[in-house]
Image 1: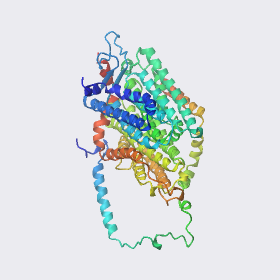
Image 2: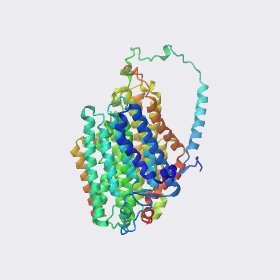
Image 3: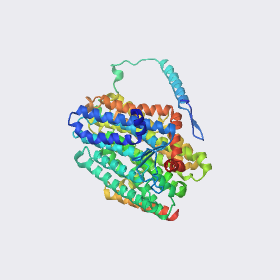
Image 4: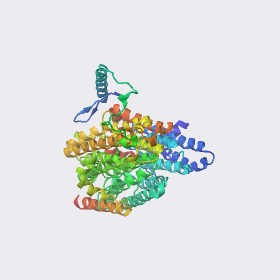
Length: 525
Length: 115
């Protein structure tokens, strides 16, 4: 077997193994020199991203990839002597998983590059990079695994690493407090997930998602497990009214970490979608659960944006917008779920709503990551997040300002940026489902624009303030990190249809196709 | 693969490249109109100084309208809403946990009993 064959065959395992290995060796490498450590973590991230792209290409060109740990061949999911149950740890990477892996690879690489400058003045960077790579491991693991207990393990890895990084700056104890809130809520959520896993295992003798899906009876216990999972994962992705941790954690974490926390939240969103579509699908009452997700989405959109407008801390403001944007994804996919049992409505607008919601996950990761990075660049140069103390930075931080404008227009859904394309898909499909929901979504976009006009004016406009006369532009690695995301925001905005055809539509099909998911795992005996 | 293919939403369409071409064309027209105007601005003269009814120009920092002064009217108009929603964001961890558990309980009733 050549090295290329080895990488392609083992790519599902490598996307988790490489950052995990790099994370634990990072402190040792850091003892050699800071340069060696930076090269080590950046190299690990670039290789992981490359492997993730190889895996995604394989999935989009040949279909779902099954990787069975410990089996004679990586596709042998069900051992002959196991009674028909897939007992090994299995990674099931379908188009939806591959879609999420691409997001993680792009944002992870951009953010890590940015971190090389933004965190360079801080101490304990070995710990910072080790935890960051563990976050990468957690997200890749969550979106790759086909085993529900494994999902819980990666969720815990992600939560612990995230809590550590939220507390990283300490900041007079405020960051530690925010991390503690995040950690305790995450632990409570994880207990819910673990309890649900226990219910499935008790009923179906299985931890494999495909096996549970195949045996799903939608008993009262299954309903309890569904509620526990929906509540826990909706809380983890910051849905209102369980969003309270979001502004605390997002604002106190270093901006580079915040940008990746967006992806971490989306991994929970992925988990939520995987549960309702792949595990339950039409065995449950799709209308009821769909409407629950829609209501969570609408509440998130409205409360998120209205709470953002009066904020005076730039990152807290952006955090509330992250909550608001999550609402769009919940709305789009919720509408798709609500009509899942009706083939006519699904083909009329349900599938388009799902595509819009899924496309928005990608777009949100790019522009919200970009916006948090611009906030980090501003904090890096002037040392405050208080909007009342800012002004006139457009005179000196021109590139940061341009990147901010791109991100702000994209999040507000202004053409031709990427946010517009996905929002349009959501507006028009949701309008056919319920016009009031579409109107709410459009009003929220207008308020989003208003909110970012306030930030733009407060930060960049006005005369150059005397206290910021010596402020310089952000360092080059930070600009490159922002530039990568800004370029993707523009590129995906100008050419949305190829992205929909190549990535979004296959992901939506994979999510809706429960029988295909089950067959890809259990058909591999 | 057609890079410039429009997004078909099932209800309408979105062709960003066509939009961009129209935007560029409009920008060129605006630029040509602007070029026909008379250029009378002279940099570094009295023209560049703000006239504030004869008063001295205040400090640069004092001129800038700060974030808290923006959208006062909007916040005032929705005062009732904000008076209700802002206090819910207490910053207290136990409150966060209560919301989480309460939502779970409500969902249990909806999914477990009603569906």
